[in-house]
Image (cartoon, rainbow, N blue to C red; front, side, top):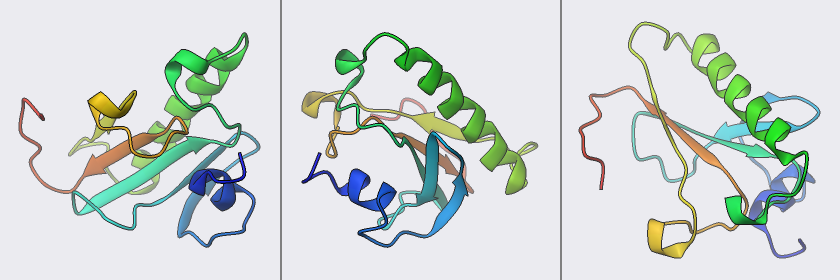
Length: 114
C-alpha cells in the first residue's frame, strides 16, 4: 500500500530504528513509546487487519510470534517478561492498518490494560 507508513518502513522509504529483521518480519522501536521498552513487530507483507488475512498468512503470524520471543531474548526480557498487544480495527485502537504487535516491557504492566 502506497500510503501505509509501515510499508514505507519495510521499503526503506522512511527510517526506523530496526532491532530485528528477517525475510518476513521487521521489528523496530516505536517513536511514541508507551513503556520503557516498546517495539513494533510487523509482517513485511501488507495485511490491514486480521480480518484481511488470506490462506497461508497464519504462517506469517507464527513467524511474528517467533520474532517477538527472539527480540525479548535479545534484550534480556526472559526473566522480567513482556506484554504482546495487537489492536484490530479502529474501535479497538488500531491506528495503522497493517497488522502489527506492540512488545511492551521495562515496567510493571497493569491489568486490565484498557
